[in-house]
Image 1 (spheres, rainbow, N blue to C red):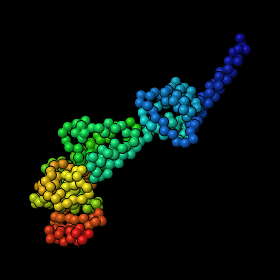
Image 2 (cartoon, rainbow, N blue to C red):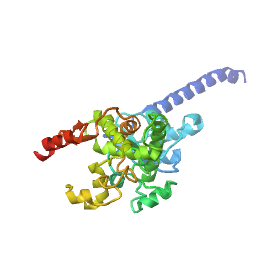
Image 3 (spheres, one colour):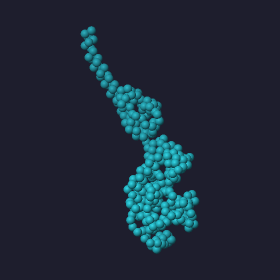
Image 4 (cartoon, rainbow, N blue to C red):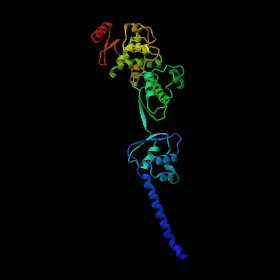
Length: 334
């Protein structure tokens, strides 16, 4: 009995050493690199649990010691990641611990979708339909159905979406990107309208949005946005027609073949600002933030006309005579 009691401390020490060694070995297995020769995408399915992910990585030969990670749910449950569905990029040399951290931080692979300033809503829809790994829910919908799904029943979609680069993960729907884009435009338009110049000939934020779209489509040189907005504002104040070609083109729709004829300028459409007074009924493009700012803070001056020089910039004129001379110089001679 006494001899057994003497051996007890030794047995306790040996057991502690064994446990310590086992713990250290377990930690080394968690720190071991993944079995990869090249970067690999792994997708966490929607609703997948931690054990399923570990088992799938083991079945694919990426994780050699799945037991070590399953043991974590008992020994370190607080370290088990909160999984989010999506694709994750696994790279050679990445350890199991680094994988866990990436999963816990939800570092899913994202893809860019760029909508340039001045695009139309139709062009934005084409880009959405072509975007890889996006859920294309709206492809077969009409514009009216899209707006209804966005709780904007009866609204015209043109100009309502902010042009920007949006990042999305696999499985996100195009409707969600449209919702984000619309919310962003709502916010920026509200901010611009709240800080607008006094005495603008605009009655609503929507009119500012329309004007911004004209500025966006006419601007080739960014520094001219304010000057172009100034011309449009002064023409509105004096009751002059805006006479801007992009509105004619927009009103022609699919009939536009790259050229505008005199007959086109005389064609009575709701968007032909050579025929109608004031602003067109809707925006004609998706304006960016700089165009919104120009519409509500137009440059002061006396110019009432402008004509493209052919290099992206414009010649601005105070009188019709000066404008006609500029047209002869930059358009007719060319």
